[in-house]
Amino acid sequence: MLTVLRSSIDAREEKRRRVNTALKIELPKPRVLLIDDEVLLRRAYARILGDSYDVSMESAAEPALQRLVRYAWLLDSFGDLGNRQQVEDAYAAFARAVADVSSAFGGAQ
Image (cartoon, rainbow, N blue to C red; front, side, top):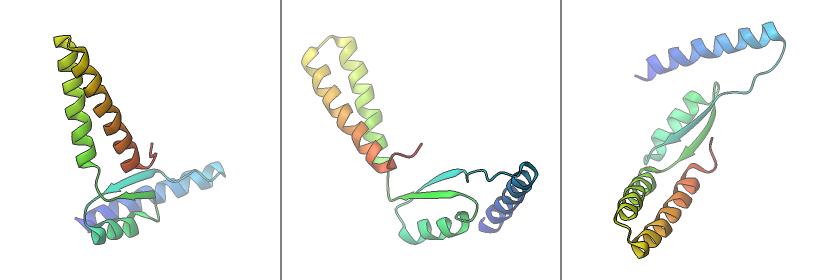
């Protein structure tokens, strides 16, 4: 898999270099966000992708994303029921989950 990934990256990097040369400008590298619990895997992929991409790494965003989705569903459900207290509680939990996701992605766009 890494060989195929490397070949694909090399082809894209060569195309980007040709475009930069033809246009006589330096285009920024595309951005990639790597999320994995395994530090060695994150580092390996970052090393592979680093020449062609602007790489950001995070350890785990899945728990934060799961909480965000869960509280979004609860917020919708409680809104349908019309229970103001439950809506306010769910909204507060949803806001915390949004902050967690923002923190996990470190402002990546």
